[in-house]
Image 1 (spheres, rainbow, N blue to C red):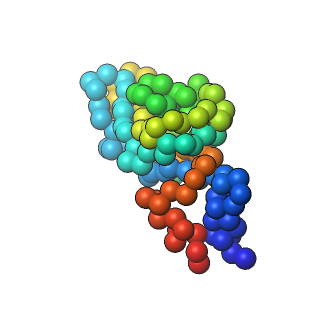
Image 2: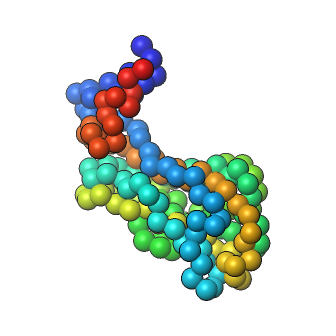
Length: 154
């Protein structure tokens, strides 16, 4: 049985629970400069209703330059519900992550994911940076809008 079929069976099984994620590659230039130290961005994908958020992972492919460059991932700009207040430092290539602030918080309605990077002084000083942002969650149903079951059949 392929990995894809195993994942499909986890979601489609009697409990109907599997791990999924929303993810997006972001470039420093994708963030909106509010005129201060913060760059903000709303991810394209949303966490579906009926999910339980687990936490976040960030793969930094190109370090964000400038100052401190700490990332917060949350339900609104500047909040950190999806990374538990951790300083997800984007200034070095590598992988960072943390559990959600309230592990397994139930998401009752579709939820946007907001990113805010704190450069320290002026977001305009950032001239480089690229990362893959992932927010993991337990799903409680088949999400046909995301392509199930074809997503997992190989």
